Length: 315
Image (cartoon, rainbow, N blue to C red; front, side, top):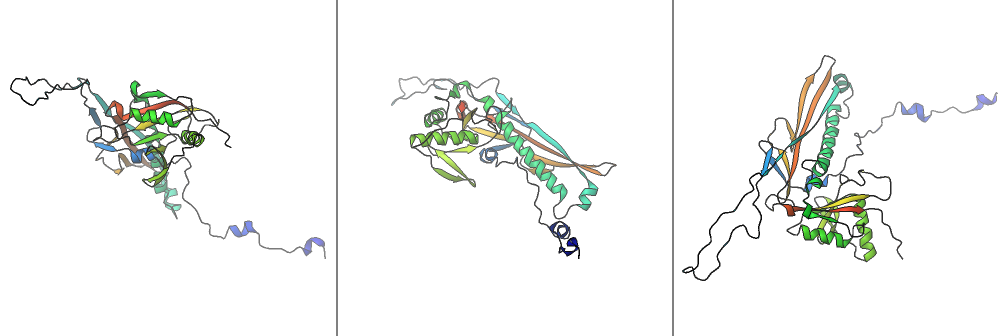
C-alpha cells in the first residue's frame, strides 16, 4: 500500500467549527470609561435651556450692620445688597449623532442581540463620553477654561506633591467634593506620597474605589489630557488637576441638562426615530443637551503644569 494511503484521516477543527454553536458577546467598546465626573457632579434640569447665575457684588461685607447693647443713641446703618448688573447666562449645547441601520440586517441578524438596540447603546456611550469631555474642556463652559485666575496655582516642582494638593484645598476649602485628575497624574501623586512615606488611604464611593487625600477622593478621568492626549505614548508629559465643590445649595459647580424632552431616553438625552427611506434604511437621531456652571469663584481650583513622568528608585 502506498505510504500516503496509510495516513489516518480524521475530522479537523476547521471543518467541525462550521457545525458548532459559538458563544458570542455584545460589541465591546474599548473607549468606554466609567465617566465618574457625570456620576458625582450634581445636575440641575432646565426648562428653557438657559441658566442665569446672579451674583452679589463682592466687598468686605455686603451690608453694614450695627452691633450694640442699646439702640437709643446709635444709628442703624441702612443700605442694600448690590447685585451684578450683567450676570452670566449659561446656555445648553447640543451633542448629536445619527445612527442608520438597514432594516434587512435588523430583520435577519437580530438574534441573539438586537442590532438596533446595540447600535443605539454604543452611540449613547459615545455621546456620554463626549459630554464628559465637553464638561471639562469646552471653550465656553468647560471647567478647565473657566477657573478664575485667583484659583490657579502652579506645581512647586513639576510632579504633583502632597504640598500641591494641600495648596489646592486652601483655594476650595468650603466643603470640597473631589479632585479630578488623569490616571497618569494620580499615579505620579502616589509615587510622590510613597517617596515621602505617606501613602494615601482608599475608600469605596458610588461603586468605585478611589484614593483619598485629606479625606477628599481623587477621581480619575482621561478627559483631563496629558500634553493634549488621552493616552500619551511618552512617559513624561504635562497635565492639570482640578479640585471641585459640587452642588447648587453649596454654591458649587453643577451640571446642566434639558429636562422633560420628548423621546427622553435618559438625563438630557433624547432618541428620535427619523423614519425609513426608500432603500430600507432606518434612521435614528440622538441628541444630548448639556452645560456646566460655576456658581462661585471658590468652587473650583486648578493645579497647572503637572508633570506625570517623575520616577524614583526606592531602597
